[in-house]
Image (cartoon, rainbow, N blue to C red; front, side, top):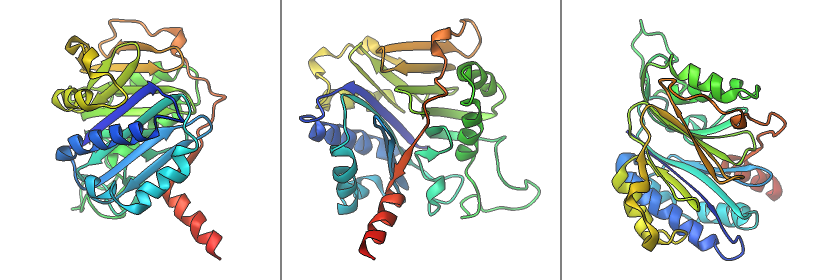
Length: 289
């Protein structure tokens, strides 16, 4: 069991940095009960996607100097009006928490994503042998999933290929991801452990309805007096695409009862550029030489 979460809103980058950090802290704290082994978050900026992840207890990690310094140096000066972030508090079940590549948000060529659940037909080991699923050498099922769908992102018809692929998945999943350099957040679930809120001005999601509701009550970016509980919806056997550019939510039923809009095509000319805290530390060490 893990906690996944995300926010998208229009902000004032010069005034709202502290509000962004406060809201992120609230979501991390509320989600930690679902996973306390690792923590990570990604921010989709105008030119790149910024990622911070660590194999520490989430509420401990966000109080450390290296976390605060990383965000101040790389996020604060690069924020723009479009806030798009996704994150996870992880309970390790598959793939060592000491492997940076297995910790989330996961990085692939075209996609940055988070996952809660288990893909039982995406295991990266010989089932005839006894394996320690937390071994450093085991690639997580989550990473395998995102690497697979990343290949679909080389085609404009990503959404149709992606939803078709979900039908082949065995296991329980709730996922959220950002694709290429698009101002979009895509979420999907086949188990219902995913809830979202959208009111034309603010989009957010979390793994539990109670987490989402509690977050909205204390959010600095959202006016809690405007909460409409009817707008807290469950994502079950659906894919939701939030497009920040047009502030629109599209819904696709996994049973195929609604068609896929042509407007949901992906711009394959937008390339994903990632800068993470591992690269940041390497850069700092190089500057000391």
